[in-house]
Image 1: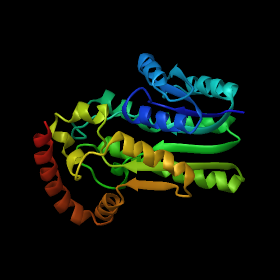
Image 2: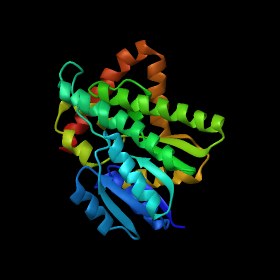
Image 3: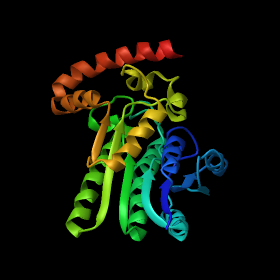
Amino acid sequence: MVDVAVVTGAGRSLGAAIADRLARRGMHVVVTDKDEMAALSTVDNLPGRGTAFRLEVTDPEANRVVARHAVGIGSLRVWVCNAGVLFTGGVDEITDEEVRRQVEVNLLGVIYGCRTALEVMRDGELLCLASLAAHGPVPGLAVYAATKAAVLSFCHSVNVEMRSAGRDVRVRALCPDATDTAMVRQVAGSPSSAMLFTGTRLLRAGDVADAAVGMLDSPRAVRTLPAWRGVLLRTSALVPRLAERAVPLLCKYGERRRRQLQ
C-alpha cells in the first residue's frame, strides 16, 4: 500500500519544498493550499505522485474531506501543518481582522489538522511548523509569536497524550528562524518586521524543508533552527529585565539589516 502525506499551505515556498522532499521519499503527497492553482503548480513540479486540494485550514470539515481523500489513496503516514499567516505591527496597531486571521490559521488550523489526522491515522507522524518566535519576546510580532508558542505547547501535550494512550503517532514541532518565503517578503517593507532580520541571514526554504522532513527519521520532538538563536530567545524570556534592555537593541540591529535588504 502506498504511503501518503498531506502538506498544508504547500502552494509555494516552504510548503512546496516540504512536499518535494516527501515525494522524493516515494510518498503520494496531497498538496493543499487556499489557492488551488498554486497547489496544482506544486503537484505539477513534484518528482513523484501527488494530488492538489483547495483547503481553508480553519474549516474542520474541509480538513476531514482531505483526510478521507488521503486514506482512499493509501496509508496516511504524515500530516504536515505548514499553513500560516503573518501580520506585523504593534499589538495595538494591527487590525482586529489581522489578529483573528493569525489565531485562526496559525493555531486553530494546526489543531484542526492534527485532530483530523488522528481520526484516520493508525500510526505515523504529525509535523507542525512553529517558529523561533515561539521561544521569547518578539516585538512587532506579538500575536504571531503567541500563536506559535501555543502550537509548540499543543505539540508537547498531544505527543504525551499519544504515548499515554499507547498510540504509535509521534508529534513534532520545528521552530525555524525567519525564512526567505513569500510570507516574510510581504512584510519586509515595514519597520515593525525588524525582528525578522536579526539573524545572520534569512534561512533558505530548502534548508528548512530538509530539517523538517529530517525530523521524521529522528527521535527529536522539537527542533529549533538554528539552535543557538533558540537559546538566546529562551534566555530572554526567562529574564524579563534583560529582555527589556536587550531586545530593543536587537530590533535596532534588525532594522538596519532590513533596510539594507530592501
